[in-house]
Length: 363
Image 1 (spheres, rainbow, N blue to C red):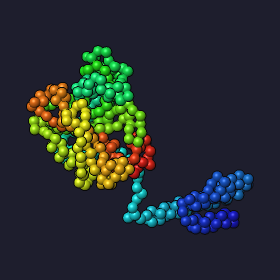
Image 2: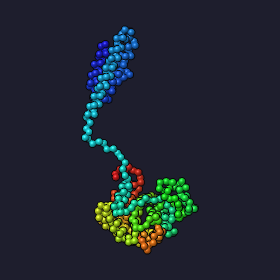
Image 3: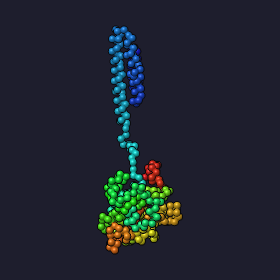
Image 4: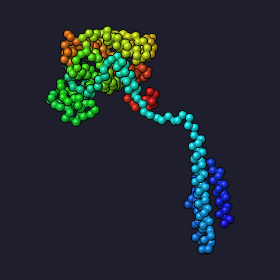
């Protein structure tokens, strides 16, 4: 009897002094666990005479029930105290979420700027392209270096029958390469080296006037370095109408770069050769980092070449089904990687595709 009372007083004192649920759980195990003090009293009853069992048994069970009830009540109060101490006005912890890749950010910004100037955004088209659309229809001669293996990924599964349906070939059932390439025109297949084939595909099914941009991925068979990758993105621009000229191009592209870099941009046009435009131009902007003074980005020239452009070649217009005596237009292609490198001062194009979260999480 005295032992029970001693254990009861000791346990109640410890329960009352407990300050958190973890310490309270330790007290419960100490007295009511498998090897607890009250549990051991109950086990010792088996050694007592029957008359003593009848007296001690109910008292030990009552002690166990009492302590269990006190512990439950104490735990309830401790939890209520913990919740009442929560400051609901305190800012919560920020949950880590995914976010857009820097190339996606730049591409979206480019698209938004052109949309604001009434350009339509067209689906990027097939990445597995035919020689006809990638070269022939764009006025690229058969002996042009771009057709050589050092520039183009030619596919070993090239079709021998020009009319064979690509949708029957499981090698090409992926993404947007299936339904939009129901037929093959022009023989050999390749991974497109630019987005310019979409000029022909669009002109074949639409009538001028129109102004479009076409974002998409392209592929080049070349050594990778800080400024070259085997796959990258392009945004093709094409504007065709009866009175489209280079002054339209100059205004649109100056407006585009000024909005993109959020400041007035000085530009320079210089003659160049591209088979699908005549005349052909290289478009340069004053270095956005040094303002033309010369730095490591512009190689101390003060200027950055950002794109090739020009008036659409008459042969390309004919390939698209237009009469070059009635319609004319301009075209250019701009690379989101190149723009992102200038905009964010990124030194190496390979960083975009390395998958390093230390780089990606900065945006």
